[in-house]
Amino acid sequence: KTTTLQVLAGLLAPSSGTVTIDGLDVAKAPDTLKARIGFLPETPPLYRDMTVSAFLMHMGRLRGMSAEQVRKRLPDVIKTSGLEGRESQVIGTLSHGFRKRVGIAQAIIHDPKLVILDEPISGLDPKQIVEMRKVVRRLREGRAVIVSSHNLPEISQTCDRILVLHDGKLVASGSEEDLTQRLGDARIVLTVRGEQAAFEKWLTDHPKVEVMDPRPVTHPYASAVVDLEGDIRETFLREVMDA
Image (cartoon, rainbow, N blue to C red; front, side):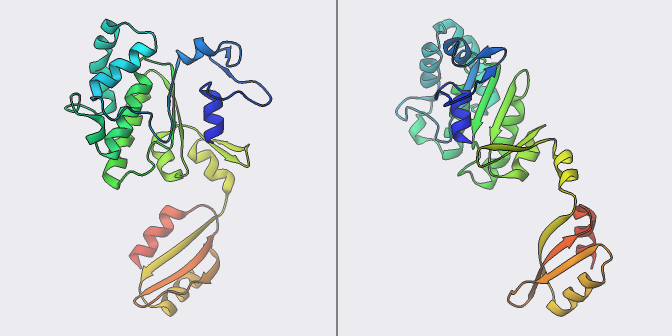
């Protein structure tokens, strides 16, 4: 995934084929396209000894903006990235989550039409993940956003369309609902608090359970791998909780 994103961002030349963004070939118009693209690699490219505002001013100037243009753009970038109150803080003193936000801020300082985020939630704690979701949703206003992640539930909460890559090939694309329908039946691993024998009997008697394989767990828990007829996970889990 990372290689693909670097090709899209114009950082790597494709070994074959072509990449077209906004009607332009990446190989033929790299400078023009880079002005329209914002890229956040998995490890944000930050100068840790600079303050947030000074760093963003520097990045804006590197992208050909005047100092006045950057100053006018800064308030919106700070708000979109969730960095209010951190403008004068030295980047090296920020938490990992806020450094990720500074990385996003540098990616959008020049108001690109396309933003590419490589693993934006990697290394974040649960609270930071929730905040990062809000940032990604705000980024969608007025621009296209590509997010790369191994975490499918996280992607489903922020993205309209999902593309699945396997061994460098695109194997599926569509909304979460589209992909779920294509998958058909569902397999889930269930672990509950209760007696294993009673749990197995309940699963065996359920009309929508096609296959039930017990899993070894320690008391007071019970566990099994379950194949369901159709993707009825939500209703099935409610029934498990009721039981």
